[in-house]
Every structure is written in C-alpha cells, then in structure tokens.
Length: 277
Image (cartoon, rainbow, N blue to C red; front, side, top):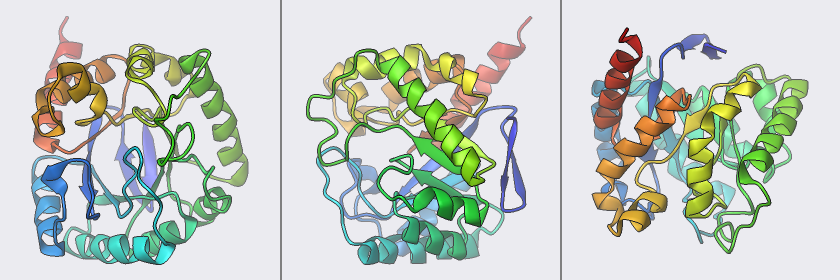
C-alpha cells in the first residue's frame, strides 16, 4: 500500500513522511508540549507544517504509563475544538485524532480529522472499528499490552515480535471485514513493552511489512531513549533521531515525532542514502 485516502486527499507513502504530535492535554510527558493554550497549539501546528509535517496528530488524552482515563466529555472538549481550529487555519493539512474512544473519533472527524489513531487497536471501545468503517477514514491500529494505567507493570511476552505480528494479522482482518480500507500499523513502542522489547521490535520492524500495510514508528523522546542514555525526555532529541533512522532502515513509512524539522532531515538523508549506487 503506497497511498492512503484521507477523505479525498491522497497521502503518498512511496517515501516516508513525518507526523507531528500535538498534545492538547495538561499532562504531556514531554514538557515542550505541556499545558499549551489554543493559540500556542495553532502556532505549533503552523511551525510543524512549515517544517514539513505531512500529518498532524492531535490528542486530548494522556496515554503515558500510569495515566488514568478521563471522561469522554472532557477528552472531546480538549481535542475537538483545537482540531477544528487547526483545520480552519490549515485546511489542506491532513489531521489525525489520537483517541481510543469512538465518540471522540466521530466528533473529531466531523471537525476536520481524516485519520483515526487508536492506541488500543479497537480493544478499548468495541464501537471504534465499526465507527471508523462507517466514516471511511484511514485507521492507525496500534498494539498495546494492557491499558495506559497498567501497561508498564512487568509486561511479559514469550516472543514479542511474533505476538505483535499475530495481533496485527488478526486485527487487520477484523478491520478489513468491517470495511476499513486504509489501515496503518504501529507496533506501539513503550506501550506494554520493556526497553528490551522495544529494541527487539525496532530491530525486526521490517517483518511487519509482510502485512502489506504501512508501518508507523512512534519513538519520539520516549523512555527507551532517555532511560537507556541516563538523560531526560527534554534531552532525548539526538537519541530520537538515531532510532528514527533505524526505523526507516527497517521499513517505517511514518515517523510520529515532536520535532518535525529534525525528523524531516532524517528522511532527506535516508532518501539520498537509498539513491546512492
């Protein structure tokens, strides 16, 4: 699959693209996006688009390890208005809503989103997959073991790569049977995985190409980087760049990042590397 249909706009994935992260939450794990007001989020969106983001991913619910769920109403209040304003200001930009709630997804698509990014792969809301199918928008299906509240409490796998691959084979079939045409898969780095699991998945990322679906890599400033290096999330840009390069070498089509300009530079250099005789 080399392109996806985002409500009539074709997103070409022949070459990798950047998805910029916009957190409309008061408790982002990355302090650079902490408690931004609506006008600041609009300015951030503008900078990301200028820096080359092909997609903006807007979320109103923190899913960091240990986070607790909030009401559908509160999540919708956080994300839908901001997403609508970004869509009004940048109507040509493809917007994704980061939610596992089908009601929020429906409201966000009505406000201008054209992709639904679900960390639970439809497992936290049984209505999500049929809702996405009815809206005929692309669906990002991520793997997560457990829930954000408990996912990092000693996650265990017999073989993390095989189990995540089996999950996608099952979920892709379920999504396709429901009528979702464009499916993107995300192995869920940091979502119910130890640091060792994350590196195993990254090293074997090319295996997921056997699904025939584009692969999204969300490694930006995560604890796998800053805990390994003994630094903070604010100091993890260089490590993010390194792992993003590894993800591209292993077949990632979308890099989900906080730092769009730097990720775009990785893709430019990766493209030149591939073109070399």
